[in-house]
Image (tube, rainbow, N blue to C red):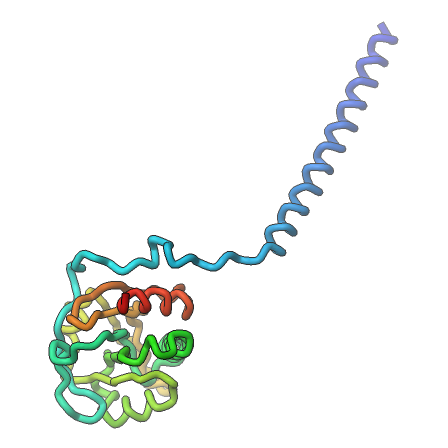
Length: 217
């Protein structure tokens, strides 16, 4: 009986040893797999990616707008007959707006001559502080052919609603006055004034250029 117990104990010890070895091997394989994935270059998004294809159907939002541009003139989208990128923001925005404008500047650089007719509409959600002069000065800091748009609170709210966007004015403080939480989408509008695509903040400048180029095909 003692002999059998010794054999059983030996088998148990051997199994534990083997199991420990397999666990160690499994751990090493996991590390190697992680290293492989970390070193593998990211693949570029192909132009055939369905997520980067212009919509052929009409979106249930978007459309014409009438506001005041940064030169103090009335701006009617329906009269323009050119493609636009449209973004809601405000001149005192500390982060999202300058980041978006910088990304659009990179997209324009990538597009080159393909962007000769493309303009960007920067629609202010802060008409109380963003006068036409303020918007013109703000946009001059970015290498983007942009038109600043402002107006009354009611006219801004109408455009925000039409584009299914949103904004919320935060509490006032003595340092920044107040901040505004707002939509971060950038809308692509064709020469007929129809909304064809909207970009998320995660879309890169290269991806923006890929979609914009489809307008000229």
